[in-house]
Image (cartoon, rainbow, N blue to C red):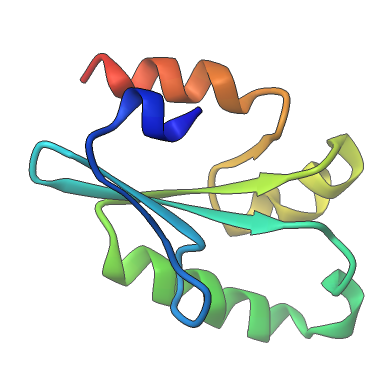
Length: 95
């Protein structure tokens, strides 16, 4: 879906920003969270993780599997469910 809309799509496994798309001179990251480890990390650890993403990219989205996870992650940044992802991609691809 992303590769159809954006010229550059990078998938990272060891750096912040699981998926990164380039739009003109901006880099937008999508941090994918399943919610499995949410309780395994402290609030401070989550803040540090998302602050690192925020510092490295022009913008970022936390992508979660469902509404329950969305409520947990919303305090850390823009959070969307996988069902909302196509709408966000459409918005970003028209920039």
